[in-house]
Image 1 (cartoon, chains in turn yellow, purple):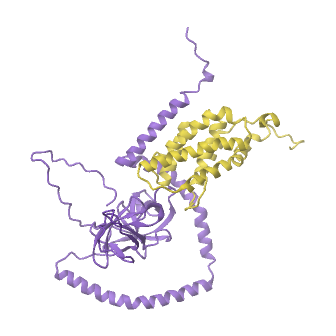
Image 2: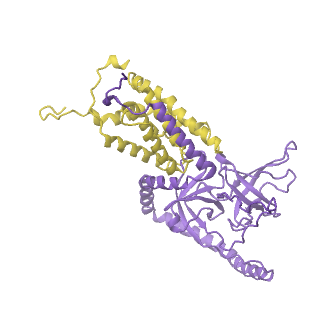
Length: 173
Length: 304
C-alpha cells in the first residue's frame, strides 16, 4: 500500500477556479475534431471522476450532469445521454472516494476502469434503445486509454496543490 | 430530544438521492428528445454554451490547414492547373450537349405542361468536423440559420447526395449522412426507373436497398439516383451504386448493398440546396368517422 510506503504530502487548499478551468479544458479536448480515431479517451469523464474522488464536496453529481449536457449539445448526440452517464460516473467516484486514495496510482486506475466502462456501456445501452447503430467493440477502447491516463491526470491536476505554502527566498525548493 | 449534527458537517442530500434526481432528469430529457423532439429549445441554449468551445477546438486545425495552403508549392499548383484544364476540355463537349438537351427538355416539358424545374438556390458550406457521436453518422457544417439553412434541406457534393440537414443552430448545422442508420432517401434505378427507398447501413458506410422484392429488376453496378418524389432532393442526383445482391428464397426481400456515390466521408465542401418553394399541399387524409373531430394529430416530421 502506497500510504505506508511513502510519506504523504499535505496538499494545499484547492482553487475552485482551477477546477473550473480543468473541466473547461477537458470539454475542449473532447470537442476537438477526432474524426474516427479509435481509443480517444473521454477526458471530461476522467477529469470529473478525478475531482469527484479528490474534492467530493466541491464537485458533485449535479455539475457532472451539466457538463454531460454540454457534451450532448456540442456533439449532436441524444440530449441527456452523456448527462446520464456522467451522473452515474460521478456517483461511482464519490462512492469510491474514501477507499480509492489508499491505493497506488495504478491501482486507482484499475478502480476507475470499471467506472469508465460502465458509463460507456450506459451510453451504448441508451443509444441502442433509441435506435442507434452499434459502433463496434473498439468503442470501449477509449475507457482503457482513459484509465491508463489516470496517473498522468492525477499528477497534472494536483500540481497547483503541491506548491509550497510560502516561497522562501533563501531556500527556493 | 432529537439530535441535529452541527451545520459544518452538512453535505446536502445523500449521493443516492442526488443520483436519482439527476438520472430521472436525464431520462426525461432523452425521452423528450428521442420520441417527441420537444427538447430542441433546451439543446439550442446549451449548444450556445458549447459553441465558443467548439470554435476554439477547431482553431488549431484551421490554422494548420491555412499554413499548409500557404506553402503549397508552385509545381503542385501548376500540375493541378494542367489537370483541371484537361478535365475542362473533356467537360466542355459534355456541357455543349447538356445545353442543347436542357433547352430541348424545357421545350418538351413546356409542351407537356409539366412544371419547369427551376434550379434551386444553394449555399456553399464547409464541413467543420464529424460528430463525435459514434452511434450516428453526422457532420457539422459552418452555415446555420443565420445563413438561411433550414432543417430538411438536401446536401450534395460534386458527385452526388451527401445527406440532409437535420438540425440547425445559429451558426452551424448538423447534416445526417445518407449512410446513417436512421436516414432514408427516395431513389430510383437509372436503368429502368424502379422506385425504392434506400436505408443507411450505419457504421459500415454502406446503404441497404431494403424491402425490395426478391424478383425486382436490380442488378449489380446499377446506379441509383434520387427520384425527386419527396421534393426534398432534386431528381436525378446520383446516390449510390449497387455492389452486392443476395437473393435468398427464404426471405421475401432481396438483400441489396450499395456504396454511396458521393464522398460522404471525404469532401470538405458541400452544397446545401434550398427546398422547392411552391409545393402542393399534402393530400388531406380521409376522415375515419363521419362527425369525428377534424383535429389531426401532426407530429413534427424530421426526415422525409
